[in-house]
Length: 479
Image (tube, rainbow, N blue to C red; front, side, top):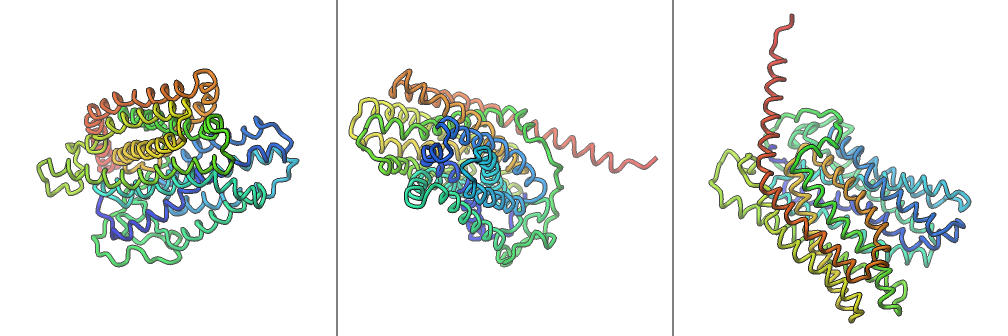
């Protein structure tokens, strides 16, 4: 891919914009948790019935990016991003106005809410794939992840405060207003970045793709490049046929599920171990995990870029390949070198956290371990997600959508099983099990490093053969 015309400062501005948009997927889910008992009373339903709205939300978090994310790989990032935010804002208006006699409407609108919010993460990953080179992608992904990670940190606390002071409908009005503001910002400033439409940013797109205030990409001289071929809508599940991609997706699914299981059980395990904590104090416990995730996102991004450059310097320099896009570059090694060490730390902290809760030691112990779990967990997920975009740069939104589908499916299963596990095994052994499952991903990572270069070479060979066939077909004389 040709170097983008956007300056480094402009790229950071774009990454900040999409990080703002990516905030709403986890925020809309986590802000809802504190009002579940209140909704059960308001709608005269059981807790299990209201939990069904959570289950449907998770299901659509996995399904909707498969459509919207893949659509953005073919028809542009800007419009799809704005449409998702619009769908989120409108669904929140409906939720805020839902009569308490219409439980079915609550279920339906929660599905639409998830369909709008969840897809922003996949589309944002596509934008990063469009504007970044491998050398800088790790840092961009680190900062971009701050938005999605900020939601779980502040969502439960914010939801509790809004519901307590203004009523449960206030959380939906809050989401409507903030997502509407984000949508306006995108309309004003976000440029189109899809190479099939704007090339490296130097091609003027049709006027409908222009931001209202086109301030980005005007100061940087760059060679005008041809637009990449526009791709037809492709089934993103076909990505699972690639061995290295399937292994990476399974690894992130397991790690995400363990993290989600820890997050979902924080309230129950802390309430059981430290019964004097009130609801506000329990909500604040979530902040430790969120703070760790935010720190981990930034630090991991810088480490990924540093590691990439270290591997790059260790190889013979080829001036014709400034971005190391050649098949010989060990991109798997560059991205995954530290992952086995991080997995060991992550597993150890999961186990330690569980036994701290089980033995009811001073609350500072499990809270500190939650910070480390959040930091290392997001570093692992970001490292693997960055590699997946490196492997499939022209389908970056689709591959993140696949990632979202698989990890949400597995995460929903673990969330439904975490309380029975805690009841059956106890806190200590439950987190020993989760930590052990996370540690089992180390051999999978090693396997990706070994087979990844061959998988990339095979894809490149198939793509070249397909290109030659298409060229021969175009050159054939008409009979």
